Length: 467
Image (cartoon, rainbow, N blue to C red; front, side, top):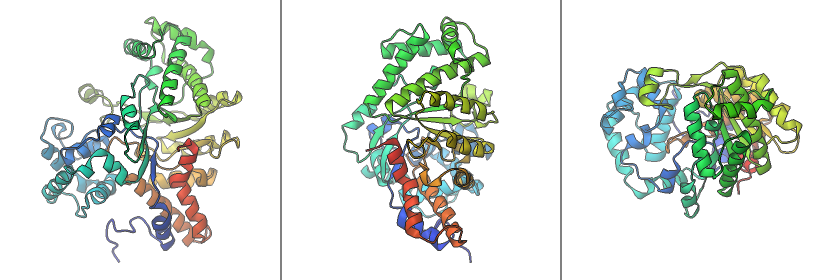
């Protein structure tokens, strides 16, 4: 029998899976503790003019697919009219069969706009008209879109120099959810281009009120900004790296910083030593604040230099890297743990070959002080799809405690991306439902359902200590 596409039991192959999802997972609210949503759009409760604007603006997942389908850049990031861009996406959608974009696209149309029709060139005009009309209604502004998905906490990603004015404005609004900042200090230790690095440090000095002439000055400025972020309810820091910096010569950080601060160039090895020196000191600050530190490791970015020059970063030219991770990651975590200054930590890998490396590395530094103190995070970016999620959860189950997993994040720039939490929850429940059906775990829905609710909501609430 052919099962209808995207019905109520989508991705749920067994009766236990269906019960786990509908009775335990689906009612859970959402804490999205890592995303790239615009605090400005949230605070100002932005209204989107068209489906193109809310759906394709900044979404490099869709952009990559369109380019692969032969769509010209004018209809992706160029100056084509909004409907022309939408139509180019609609023509691409049928080609995304078996790509997660096909599922996400239709989940988003269904959950936000009540559209059950498949998107393609023929259906595009009516779907565009219907959805763009809906977006003019008050309950399709940004804040109702989030509340409608039962979002309770949104953690944006913010540079240390950010004023956090939009977070301040949002704190006085009765939106039904909280917007909290996340400290993202990548520019503080990315010193390959000396002029831009020093220009950034000048802006950090200006906003912190601390002249940055030495390594100690840099740390003082960072502590100033961490205190500032903390005053706005910040619970986490995040870092995007190819691999963790080299901490074996961290005592050299002062001399290396002074050289680059005075215009000197560092070798790649020296850059990694300075990076490691800064990360160790940041880690100590996070521990003192009881923040969670997150590390997204393994992306090789900006591969297409020609299009990077015309379009800039974060436009769809990054991919999975094959960097060596384990030794440096072990040294970094161990150095902080030796002085008992290792903060709660979430590790994300982009290369699936590192799955078991990260699953077992996390277990090395769980010390009983906090359940799941060091976590292996959800399947990230290119792995954020059914197969990637299943592999991540299977490896975590085999080598750690799935029951302590802090679950899903959108990691998205789109306000229509929250059905990804539903997608994750269906995959999780199907995985466990299959185990029940095969007799591999007990047919005890209360036992398994409690674990489902913990993974979907309770664990992350308790881990970050959200109120």
